[in-house]
Length: 205
View 1 (cartoon, helix red, strand yellow):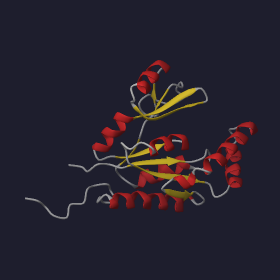
View 2 (cartoon, rainbow, N blue to C red):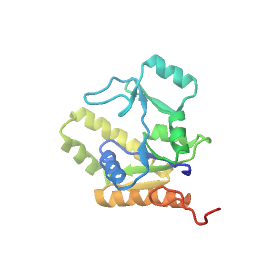
View 3 (cartoon, rainbow, N blue to C red):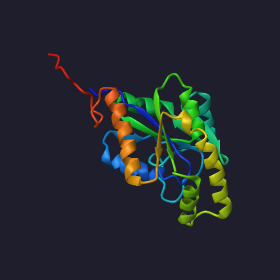
View 4 (cartoon, rainbow, N blue to C red):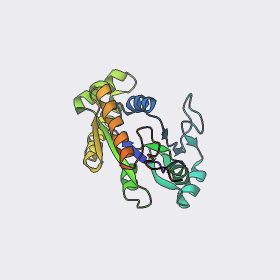
């Protein structure tokens, strides 16, 4: 019987490299899964319902919200996003460690929720100047959008001290090693192997 899994909250400013970092770590560690959020925004090209997001109508979202079915929810640029409480709890009970990729607003909401224990990790760029270089290097955003992202990043960085762990994503390899170490340490603290499997010292027969 698998032990209970751990909920990991990860937040980062746009452009800090969180997605690339997570892909690398999740390829190296077993027993990790993403929490799939609900959203009212329409699917983008290539996105699939139930894999990238659970795409729902505003009415459906509001019913779930009013019934208390979200661990956290927020309205961003006119669209709603939320994390399903029943889905997360079910995965944790099955022994799955869950990665919850949310912003500082959602992380603050869950931090106040006494019904769920989460380990929070903030992924930060080495400097705002480096973050700006990365954002401009993408070549996908307008100057106005980049300025807005930088403004938001400065605000989000102020919340970093509220997190359990801070990982600076300067070198991808070093940042991945640090995040991997955090996950392994938390598994060890809950008497589990680096793979996430429970440690059994004595066989009860």
